[in-house]
Image (cartoon, rainbow, N blue to C red; front, side, top):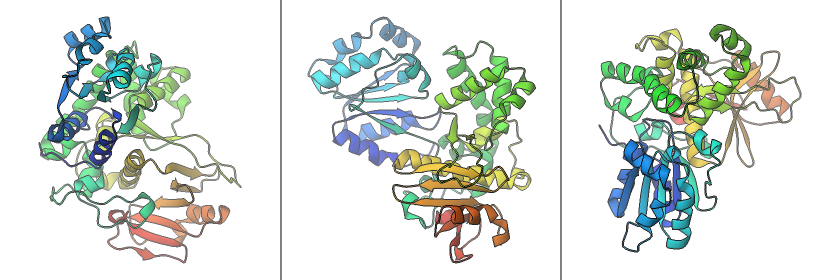
Length: 403
């Protein structure tokens, strides 16, 4: 499998240079282990503790202080890499001792924040720097041409032409292994993802006593991705109580399967929809879990929704990496909508996402209304056009490759 250069590598190296430890969270199969080994193998002497090994996990569950006994000696590794840290939250106290008393550095990785929160694990504020790893971003695929909005821009960091197109991204997503293998194999890998997720996250942590019901919910949640879920309707379709449906959405958030896009309700002059939207972390996983055929013509059937997912997921990934802006959407009770609102320290940037070309002002009533209500001078439309152009004095159309 091709080893992709990741934007976050720079953050990780700088954190280690500053003598801080790292907690790296990300969904399964986004490349956390590959990334950490790549970062550490170049400059560092390190030890690996892989808690997915049941025998090793049982040892540390019985005696968390064993970690101290193993690493308090001066001649042991200066960096300790622990994978699947959520499986033994009790280790955090021993980790703190080794950081404070013996100046050890740790890289901890995990695919779920749920067990850490539920166990009230000591996440070592000030000692651990939290980072997130997502599926491959545009710049990691080498498909960005220019950054037209500098507040959210990221450059390409590879020059390799991997022939992974917009259409591929909207059908198969961008998990590193999915990008690296031929199309026929991608289908099988993506369809196995939900099974792996149910077995390794849900069953292993006893989150749901009935995997069949949770599996039915998961399929519907994937199908509803990108919208405001109707909990009552989902309850009626699955036979699960409304309270449990809400709990299941929280499970998806905690296990990093979905992102939550909150509504923008500041300076509201109209009745605003106040429920969040939810987006599966990867389009290919979403399509597979929703049991949508993974075929090239899928983009002809549902191009608008898939393109919206494609753009918004990239913005979530840039937000996780940069951490200096917030994401929202805006919709009024009467149906006016702006797909994405980006808020920086001193600026609000409204963005409408259109998969077509030849966009007219009549298609942008929501964007114009939002600009008026918030007294803003600039708004943007992201499209599949080839070149940017001004649609009006305050609205600019930008190809997605220029974002």
